[in-house]
Length: 115
Length: 171
Image 1: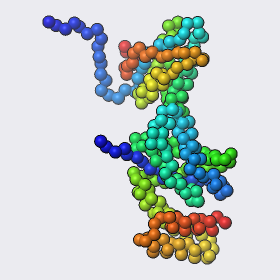
Image 2: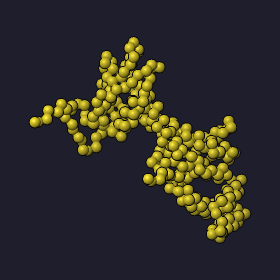
Image 3: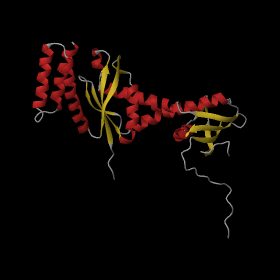
Image 4: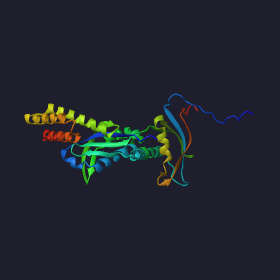
């Protein structure tokens, strides 16, 4: 009996990738202020600064796309800072004194334009 | 089971003015280093260095020699944070200074050996730079004494001798 076809395809990149990409969603309590793109970037940098200090805050992180309606964004970071960014996002707990959380939906080291 | 490996960083406190020397205390140096790590590497860096601690293992306030200990995995983190120390603060007194790293060793003993050799070399440069005959004579004496008493004495005496010469040089 043949196994059911896989619903996803896994691709492994052998060579060192320049960047890693993260698709994240920000979870906020209802009725709170929603950040715009600049505030989201500031939030990410603040999270990095808290956990990894000035060195972490200096990492090149870009917000490539951001939808304010769904609060989902695609972040790009250089590969050496991928773990730092993810850990900082995980440990972020507050946005403007209200609870919040980042959910990482997907991550890839392939360019988002190709996918 | 493998033992935990440490790295010992030997550095020198270079104060801008000689009256900052009473500032050099174990607690002041420790907290200054800790602050520098916290600023540069955040909570993560602080936790990396606080297990075994950037513990101050040896401190000579007279020569300004400091020996710091950290885990082997994170000594790069400590070394890169050391230049960010800009002042020492103790009892409300603050003195601007910086830490220059002399040596990174695996044991306290290797750092001690390096320090003796380093101080001996410093004596020779002092001898070249000295201006009058009196200084020259005193440095010569201490060079002779530190090379003659090598077998019997240990580093402490040599350091003190070097300090005396330091004093005459700056006065």
